[in-house]
Image 1 (tube, rainbow, N blue to C red):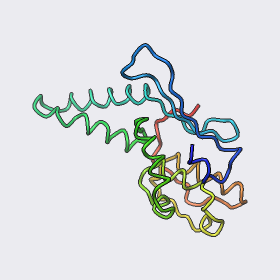
Image 2: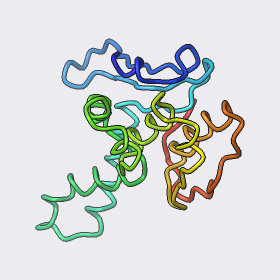
Image 3: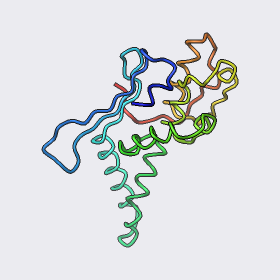
Length: 171
């Protein structure tokens, strides 16, 4: 993966994407995870996303009349993104996007995958790291990624009042 070449902690950080064999040809199970020192710090799977999406969609449908169900699919997907759940196909696109946007734009991104990767990018210098101020509603994933270079550089992490807890299972 080309993303690895921009990461600062080669050997410590591992980005992994796998597709599992399945009898279901339409939607085989896939998983993306990030490991730090061989411990998973972020994990998302297609099956987990589909289960969560189905629950949110059912909840939205139960709160609406029958004529309003056409936009429920998109609304359920948007709700999951706001919770930190991303469809695996989207994660692949975000990895490509991360490589194609300027670093400053990645640091300011509202997408937690892109912003989280920016926190461990080799272009994030010590001076810039010291000046990062995370908003109180920052995703837990971004906060965890921010702590990695802070710990490595001996910098005390600031503004770690993350209130936006992700519901992604970290294994």
